[in-house]
Amino acid sequence: MDKPTPSPLDTLRQLKEMLDAGAITQDEFNRLKQQLLFGETNAAPPAAPVDVPAEPVAVPPFSFDAPTSVAGPHVIPPPIDDPLLPPVAAPYGAPPLEPVVIDPGTHRPTEGPIGSSPVAYEADEPVEAPRQSPLGMVLIIGGVVALLALIGYLVLGNRSSERLTSNSITAADTTAVAVEEGPQAAQLDLPPVQAPETVRVQPTIPLTSQPLDSVGATGSTTGPVTDAAALEAATRAKVQRVLTAFYNDLLTAPFNASQHFAPQVERFFSLQNTTPAGIEDELNRTHFPEFTESRISFDPSTLQISAPDADGAVTATFQERGRSLRKSLNQYQQTLAQVRARFDRSGKLTYFRQERLLENTFTDAKPAAPVTTTPDAGTTPQQN
Image (cartoon, rainbow, N blue to C red; front, side, top):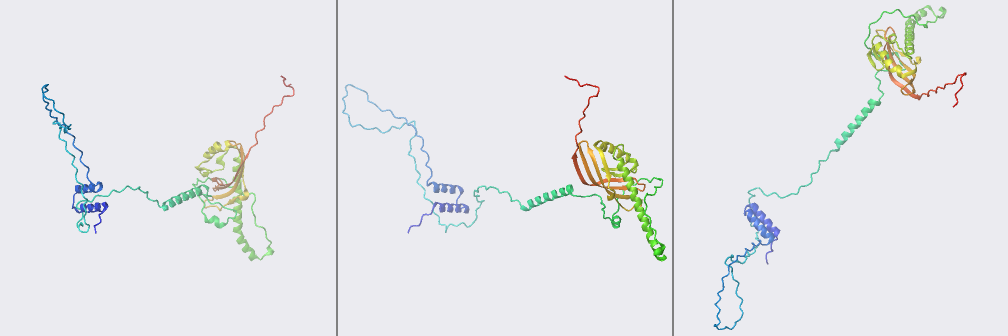
């Protein structure tokens, strides 16, 4: 039985193994590969023909006496080689080489390649971008949401810078929180303040209603309470008088700030660490030219007064209601604000600020009525 002829692919693989083992050279491998792929080497191109000069043919001289020969058969002369041209050689055809058959069982490489093996060509694959982790995107979105929440809280949050007192204030509330104190000015020696118009007095109790011991005990316990109530009433009346005079003077210009404020004022609206002269300049520049027909007052029922400090200063909170005509808008503005004020021992303001705006509405002002002129009784209208 004939041995099966190996395929060209198996033969090429065997040649590659022999090249890696060093049995054949690279040139031999290329030559055998060409023979295996194309069957035989390309024939060399034929050499260019060389012109050989032709020899002249000898012609006998012509004679009338010579006998005429009988024409024989026509013979084609052979081609005459030109001596000037190179001899024409027949192209040599190399015999086809038979494929080399190598038994893979007997020829097996025992050593690795001497040099570095050629690297097989690999097509460049598209580079894939690294996949981003979703955790980073989640953190970015969470940070943006937290930042927006913080900005919204700072802009829209109801954050009061100072503590407000309520209608349900107790003695524990006034003593638990220290009242904010600003720079104190030198105290002025003023004449004593006159007594309030209304003073609470202790009602008279008949002597026969209780024994002497009980009367003595009751008198000893009600004495300090009556003094504290009288002091609170006097302080409230004093604060109400100062606020009433302040708001009446604030209705129209000019405003005498030194009459209502201490020489050094911690705060007046947006002004800080100012003086009565600075307050007058600010009101003449911004308040009186813009706010006309002002009606500003405070609600005595909302007035809350803290206990006096060691230096005699008291803090009051109340609601302020105002109505003014805004000239730049030609509208009436109605406001209701929560105000905090601080008074020194002499009753002068050292702190005044609107802490919270409770209401703020605008209504259109009625246009001014046109001015009509009436002709005098003694004149006659002209006729055209």
